[in-house]
Image 1 (spheres, rainbow, N blue to C red):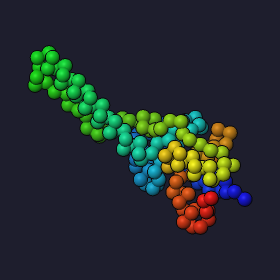
Image 2 (image 1 turned 90 degrees about the vertical axis):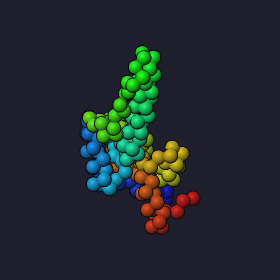
Image 3 (image 1 turned 180 degrees about the horizontal axis):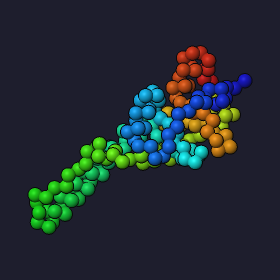
Image 4 (image 1 turned 135 degrees about the horizontal axis):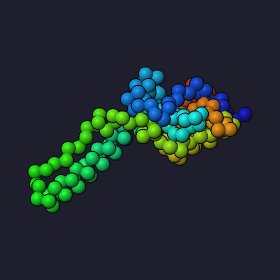
Length: 161
């Protein structure tokens, strides 16, 4: 019999609210030793926030700050103010006041509890993702991570076809 998502999923999923501060999200992910968590609003999954999202946000912010810095310098020089400088914000300032909603990846990928585990693995691989949510009738039932699949194989509980 084929192994299904329900046989592998973690049913106790740690979630966050969209308005949770990013420093709290980071602390939660570290404390719970997880790489990501679904973002839940009014009982529905609206996205997933991961450690990668937290790392990526300041990088995008830095690139944007550099672009604005360059634009401000050019504008100042055009006005004859060569010494004027735009000061880019620090990473801490970029994250300050930001929430899970600001960093999350919307459109979380999900499967049903009856999805064969081989299909889950294919989906993770094809989409270059590390987690898939297990949902039924719009309700979060669990989550499967790439590490869960590695554990199955290393424990000899699942042999890929």
